[in-house]
Length: 136
Image (cartoon, rainbow, N blue to C red; front, side, top):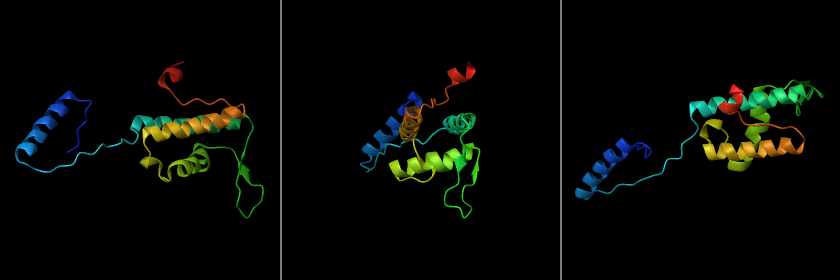
């Protein structure tokens, strides 16, 4: 049973259920579930990748494909390049998690801080997408 403690109705249902288990002298275990991102957060994250790639492209920077047999191959930045070659290596280094679907909101915030600081130190100002900013 998963209970969302931000919903009073769920809390009451859970309380009844746990009291019943206690009355029956049952053993049970409670676990705190750390939520991974919502679909809204996922869209914002991918929009952030697009913002980064656009900013780098606007500055005239190109992504250099290192490790290929053809030396010096480059291309414009894309959201996928940002995700795979900027975001994911930081995520793996910080949390040893390969899939972006497995990270939670707190981890996302920490990775965003690293990226924004890195680019900010280089004079490239980035900001994570917020609805208020998008409306402007």
